[in-house]
Image 1 (tube, rainbow, N blue to C red):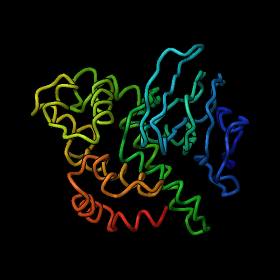
Image 2 (tube, rainbow, N blue to C red):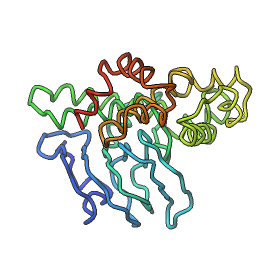
Image 3 (tube, one colour):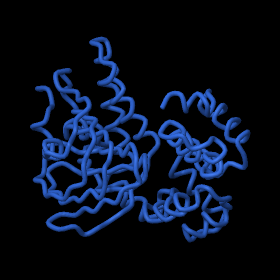
Length: 292
């Protein structure tokens, strides 16, 4: 196999509005191609590629519209949101704002190597969904590119296989059929999107479990079970993580007083914010501000 590169992508990365930061070009990777960049707003149509596309949104939220031979669906994609597109499939897409992203182009051979019982694996077309494990795998791949050394090649190969396995397990067409048939206990994409929209709108406010369950159209106990099955942690822990991430972004990006950052992110006071950030990130709001 030869190294994957721009020729294996859909063409998004060669648009004039794409500002590349780093890529895996020249590293000899045969299973995937990784690129991190700043993207300007655009609307375009792309032919299918031989690789499967995973885009991780590093910031936002930003409105994305997508379809095939026309824009048929729109969604507000938050930081950490994913955009998935299968190989050999046309893509029409509109990016509604400036965005930092990591693109991972995975070879079909890598995805098919995860097939169970010889049945081919087909990636689902998704956007706006979140998957904490897949997010961490993409960030880990970006980290390998950022700090590349030849000894990291084996690690990169393992990350590629883990990425393929997670896509097959959580984001294949067959898996979605199983979910619709009721064999998967997690929230559906629509339910999770509704919950995430409520969280984004009320991040600075107290948010009861009953409100989140209502957004998903479920009872509290059923919602809690299905949310944990979908995300991997209870709703409260997920909400705290989002608030910590938003506070860290605000602290690094500007000069808003720490007390105001605490209020904007749903913490009761500055000391509460300090305590939670120290517990989750091992640092303090003042240290995060100095990093910016």
